[in-house]
Image (cartoon, helix red, strand yellow):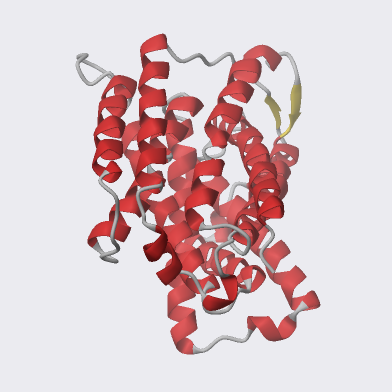
Length: 320
């Protein structure tokens, strides 16, 4: 049974945890000394162990998959989870968290464009207005007219995160329309993501000694230090396993359109956390650009017609 109220609550709780995770991850990389690649590996492997063990104990039969499922889940794990995690950490360590998240939140716009040009769904004309507003807003955010603008690596990583996040949402929705089993989807997704990074960076070369070091919390809390392993533990559990499970579970109660729009609140929450904790600020022009981007995203995501949404929804999950 679809319960929209529960869906909204799940999304808001998930983005609240992710908002704090952005600053924690930035502290681990900049103060703790772990590279973005190693932190991604640690985050995904820890989450994979937790999720897979939990599902194996609670619903072992749901983990049975065929070779076609394995191919789908491998692509989902690598493109939707592994790359999005890595690119996001790279982005927030090269540009302010608020700006990185703003660009990454172009994912809903990409989903709407996918619906129009790949899935060939009918869309309202507001899609083009949304696209135009987002492009104008993005120009203001990155200060395209200036000689320097944003860090190139941070900008590219932020855009890459948007693409990977769109893949995560689209593939999650596609899988749930067939099985409606969010737990096994994430469990296998994280396992394949962890396996991918284990190949890229073998575990025997992991700098485990760095986890025992103390790291300054930076910003307004720079006088305080905590062990790196404690910060990493947050990144693994409430920063990965829990919020992503909540987001995928929310897809059982809400349209993907609504999930991604509500999830944009992470931008505001993460910006507040980054300001209070790290003292990061965004200029007035960039704030104005951000508002245009968000307006454009909402227009684009609501451009899909009711008929198209019904057609892409599993019969057992009728629209409310």
